[in-house]
Image (tube, rainbow, N blue to C red):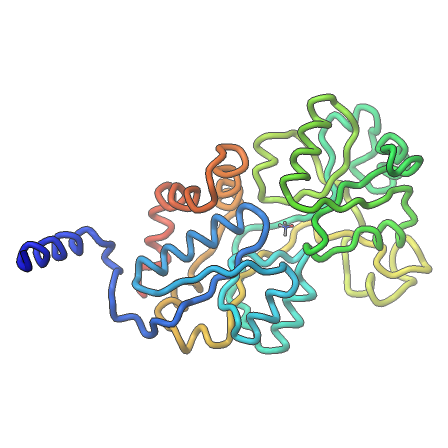
Amino acid sequence: MKKLLATAAVAAMTFMPLTAAADVESDEPIIIVQNNWTSQLVLSYVVGKVLENMGYTVEYAPSDSQLQFQAMADNDMDFQVEAWEGSMKDAFEKAVENGMVDAGTHDAATREEWWIPAYVLETCPDATDWQGLDACAEQFATAETKPKGRFVGPPADWGKNYADRVKSLEMDFEAINVGQAATLWAELQSAYDRKEPIVLFNWTPNFIESKFEGVFVDFPEPEPACFEDASWGPNPNATGDCGAPHSGWLKKAASPRFEETWPGAWSVVQRINFSNAQIADASLLVDVDGMEPEEAADKWMEDNADVIAGWTSGS
Ligand code: TMO
């Protein structure tokens, strides 16, 4: 019986990934941060599974997209795979000053901004620009907001207060935040089906671009002066009269203890580098194909085996 078990163990090991090894530097769990949008959840599992296949112990911890950075600076959490410039720049940079590690920038170019379906341009032709959109604000009014237009805003923990931007730009809109991402897409689907005007928070890369035709609304590009100097921007009397970057960064973040505690894992996470298509695919598997995030991670890993081999080789 003992011999049989030993044989089975050897056989099982033969089929384990080449990188599997019991001799990792530490068995202490690497705590991977999870947020509340789809690509982040899927890709967190991808990173976790890759590290587990190498023999590391991984735990997942949900966190607020703003508070997570200080938690990493404090070594309470260890890794975040998707930090977005448009919504997280300030919290990210503040945490770096406090010891959090900037673990590198992905190739992906990102945008997080007000977005309209293409049919909106039939009734509001200049809505690709914030002033053109504002001129048609009443088309977007609901019983709750009329005569102002409704901007369907993101969950409050995604960092930006769009009510402030509306005020700074003196727009005829009211920002109504949803509680979770799924509500954004439900609102979009229901408006889309009836071709009703809607303007909502959206981002790229995301599954939306493969399912709905639409465009981002251009606001003034942000510069530090927008938030410090009232005279900057379209409203000479207010700060915050600008939008999110039209092409923003996407970064990884890590705890200061990461590199010294798990050097092998560190060299892998440093090599992780997502393209726009890879991130959009991760969200598509869940939001269009209906998979659970963890199941989607397995499928993503299957589809991107060569990408993962690139991260793990040389470690
Ligand atoms: C942080 N997000 C990608 C949802 O804008």
